[in-house]
Image (cartoon, rainbow, N blue to C red):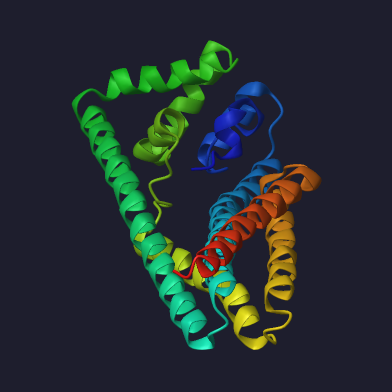
Length: 272
């Protein structure tokens, strides 16, 4: 889960929430004003909301990319063996549904396991706070000292954050978890299902709607264009160089289609 700015640089605004902790740390440092703390809290609120949305968007793009590649490989393999539209439709729909359900179930299981682990860690942290709050406060101050704050300021920041929300303060610094932003397994499953289905429709519709005389090359060209778009989007969201990401995406998808199409042609030639 993305870390918020104050966790990385607590000395700048001294508080996760931009509230009481920021005021205390600012006064101790001799320069923080209420307006600056409010601005920091405002920026943090937007950053905390934007991070999860970017993660969802990135996962959706990757799910769509999987739908494009896997379905394209399947229908191109069938197209290499037969020109029957019913066979192409059956194989394409079955592959799309199987892939969508597989992605959704896999995402649900994965996110559920992650969420269970996060909840267990939060419960453990809550117990430690209840059993020995003094030691936990010293531990939190120690994290801020390790990040470069002087002892008095590190302790004041820890005290202010603990007064505001002790569990959130420790969870963010120690566990890198925001208790209010735990991922929903059902949302993850639906996002994967929908994104894979949307991606799979591209090669499926292309192979069904195009004339049989140009079906294979035109479908391949359509799929490569779709992979170019998903490669650009994934690179943009991940902050990676777009040329390399697009090249990997297009070459990988092209190779998958070439292999399955050649397999289909070979099986047809063998009379299978």
